[in-house]
Amino acid sequence: MSNIDSVVQQLRKARAAAQKEVERLDAALSALSSGAGKTKGVKRILSIAARKKIAAAQRARWARVRAKKAAA
Image (tube, rainbow, N blue to C red; front, side, top):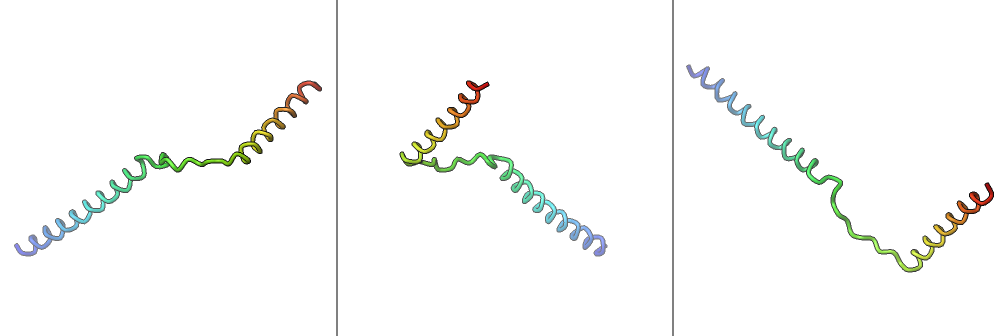
């Protein structure tokens, strides 16, 4: 009878270990699926000079597009 008791005890230990592993995996999955990639970062602030450079580059791009359209 003690042989069966020791087997039952080992099975209960294995079950407890497996249950802890499943809980750990569930926690990892929930951490990955709830909001991964949806975190808000700090808003980047551009200097006035950088904004002016960007605006000038965009105006130049549109000028090229209009030039091609007028030539066609």
